[in-house]
Structures are given as structure tokens and as C-alpha cells.
Image (cartoon, rainbow, N blue to C red; front, side):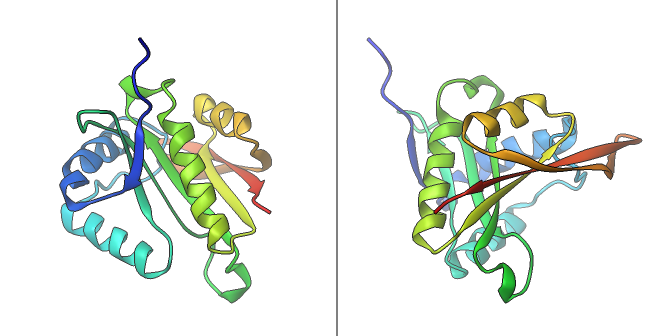
Length: 169
């Protein structure tokens, strides 16, 4: 018997610890994210509230039983009204949940939510070292539009940023 599909829903305060555990491990241990400062409970709560106030959202994907498999959120790509219909997302899936449909389910929800809010395009900023992240986005219909050499620095070395884009309408 196949397991039931994961559930994607808006993040709730009860999810914050699991989100922080996943996000901070990625910050600490990988170059998937260029940042080195870990997220805090207060900062996460403020980020979720800020996204929701702007008409965006912050979603989690959970399996039956409540274990969080990943999360996704999005916001305006750049400041200013000229970018009001261009969004950039963040999606993260726990290592043990990769390849089980959680990432695709989260991205479907983000794309649908952004489209319903009037977004025209969605961007992904992916570390040049994250071949799996690039391949994941390509499978979802994103195209590489730029590779910015040495855009960030982490663990004592320069990292490229790959910008990927998908049109939503």
C-alpha cells in the first residue's frame, strides 16, 4: 500500500521549532544558503507575519502523523512597485524527505498562491554548488536566466548564484 500524500498547509506556531531545525541545519552545514547567521524563533515569527501581511504566505509540508518534511515561502523579488508582480521563493526539504514529492507539493502551492495574488513570474536564487536544487527547478519548468560568479561567500570561498525563472501566466 502506498503512503498517503503529504499535506501542504500554512505554517502555524506549532511548526516553528521544526522549521528552525531544518533551516538552521542548512545554514550551518551547507552552501545551499549563503547566509551564516542562524534564524531565531522571534525572527521566524516576524518573517511569517510580514509575508502574510503582504499577501504572501509561508507553507509547510507534513506527512501523516505531523512530521514536517519541508517548507516554502515567497516575497517580492526586489523592492519598488515596478517589481510588484515578480516574486522570489525559498523552498527547503528535509534530507530524509527528498525525492518523496514534498518539494513538488510545496512549489505547486507557492506557484498557485503567487498566481492567485497576481504574480507574473517566480525567481529562484540557487547556489551554483547546489546541482540537485538546479535540477529540481528545471524539472518544475524553471529556466536559468543568469549565473552570477562569486556573488556570495561562505566557508572561506566564493560561491556563484544561479538565477532561475518561471512565468506563471
